[in-house]
Length: 318
Ligand SMILES: NC(=O)c1ccc[n+]([C@@H]2O[C@H](COP(=O)([O-])OP(=O)(O)OC[C@H]3O[C@@H](n4cnc5c(N)ncnc54)[C@H](OP(=O)(O)O)[C@@H]3O)[C@@H](O)[C@H]2O)c1
Image (tube, rainbow, N blue to C red; front, side, top):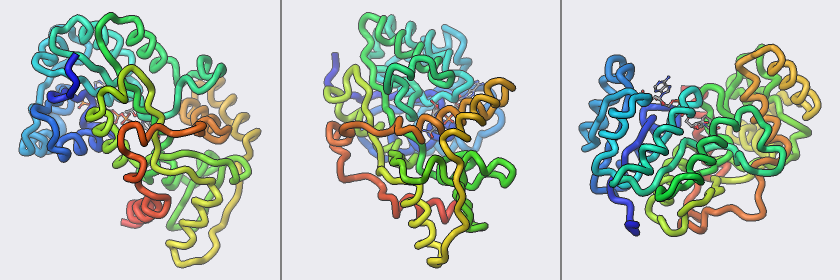
C-alpha cells in the first residue's frame, strides 16, 4: 500500500460540502493530480463552476455515477477516491466500492459521511437517515484490499440554507433557528446540552489532514469537530456580535422534537430525516470521550465559536 496519497478523485465536488472539500484539496498544493467526476447535469448547467476548477488544474471527468464503465475508467491513475455525494445518491457508492476494490490503482476510499456518527451507540443501527451510510460502511468492511476513512464531523456550523446556524423560515422555526435579522432564536432541548459542530471550511481542511495522515486515518472513523458549545452559548455569541441586545429566545423541548419527528416520519414529510438528526444532536449524539483532531495534526487549527458566528452573521446579512 502507498504510504502517501498523491492522486485524488472527488465525486460530488460541486455540492454543498463537496465544494469546500474540493477547494481545500486544491489549495493544499499537496497532491500531484486532482480530478473530479461530475454529472452531465452539472456539465450542462454549471459550466462556470467546472471552468473555475479546470483553471486551477483540476481534471474534470463527466459521466454517469451509475454506469460501471464510466466510474471504472475515471478511477484510472487515482490512488484515493473522496466521495462527497449527496444523500439521494449515497446508494451508488455500493457499486463504487466494489469497483474501487477491484481497480488496480485505487487504494483508499472516503465515503460521503461528513456528519453524524452513524455508529454512535446501539440505537444508531435503527435510525432511518443512517441506513444508506451504514450499508456503505458494511460494504467497505467486506471488501478485500480497499482501505477506508470515515470523516465524522457532526452538524455544520454554517448558516447556509437549512444548516445549524441558519435562519429557518418563520413557519418552520420550531425545528431550531438562529435568525440574525429578527434577533430571534429557537433552541433545541433546554438550551444547555452541548453539541460539537464543524464549519464546512474546516470539513475541507480535516479531509486534507486525513489524506496527509494515511496511517492515522486508516480503516477508521475520525471523529473530528471545530468546537463544542451549548445552544445558549451560541445565542449569547450571536447577541454579542449583533449589538449586545438580548434576542427573543424560545425552546423546542426534546419531547416536542420527538413528537414532530414521529409525525414527519408517519406522513412521509421530507423533514423527517433532518428532524431525526436534530433529535440525535440534542440527545448528545455528537459528544465523545475525546475527539480525533490530534491524530491528524488538527487540534489547534479549527474555527472557534466566535469565528463561526462571525461567518454566520455575514452569511445572513449579505
Ligand atoms: N453535517 C451536516 O450538517 C451535513 C449537512 C449536509 C450534508 N451532509 C452530508 O454531506 C454529504 C454531502 O451532502 P451535500 O448536501 O453536500 O450533497 P449535495 O449538495 O446534495 O450533492 C453533492 C453532489 O452530489 C452529486 N449529485 C447529487 N444528486 C445527484 C444525482 N441525483 N445524480 C447524480 N449526481 C448527484 C452532485 O455532483 P455532480 O453533479 O458534480 O456530480 C452534487 O453536487 C452527505 O453525506 C450528507 O449527509 C452533512
